[in-house]
Image (cartoon, rainbow, N blue to C red):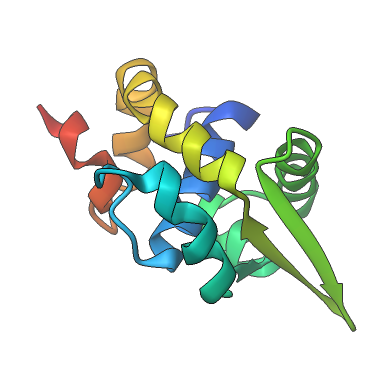
Length: 130
């Protein structure tokens, strides 16, 4: 069985949700807009470029395209540390994924289920099992 092609949009969704999970927050908690600046200021959660590549299960080229797209849109910040990159979500990124997760789940339901079929669906995608 061959894997279906996934575009940048679904990969961006995977990366943003992974970054939110690294923060350890409930994306749908009340008053998140007022709390997010403090959360981002006190938690230096981020992931490496290699972790992103592993998360989206794609090649180096697609990983770079996804990171560049997210950075251009202001959804992540990329910090270059010696020979590695640290990618962190921005406030705009948190608000974006909060707003559009349901939309992505409705459009990409089958692709999301296929992508996570061996690891199990992550917390943010469990609503798509229905």
